[in-house]
Length: 207
Image (cartoon, rainbow, N blue to C red; front, side, top):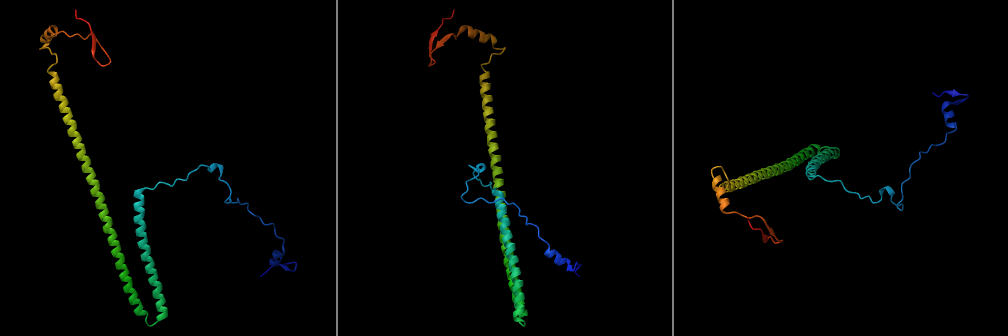
């Protein structure tokens, strides 16, 4: 019921009341095609974000699985729509239609299972190959470390043999007198001058 005020209803009073001005929100206009580039963006080069290869492979696999799932769902929904349409149109043949669609659905499910099995086998083979490659790299690294260790040992053995050979000429307490006599019998003069080519040009006489 409408409330009456002075012979007029409230609704009529509202409709006849003066309207307020329309408020328009200030919106920033878009640039036209002919406007120049903003100064803050001059010389800016858009660089695409880097793509991780491992993440890309995972995303491709997940997208393939997603496509298979969506394909199966679309087929199932299509089957349901067609079954309802057949039931409405054929009437007496609805049972036969349902049986055929059920067989078709079973065939589609079998095909979907085969696709999933093939993808599973391919994934297993890929994982096995990656594991074999990782194991091969580990073995190669171990062999390389072993070869480097053997080379290091051989080098140290060579240095030890060389040091033992040089130790035969060391001056020790037992051959000290003999070495002193040899030095006195065979004096050497190290007081000499050489040129740029390393030739001795001047030597002083020992006194």
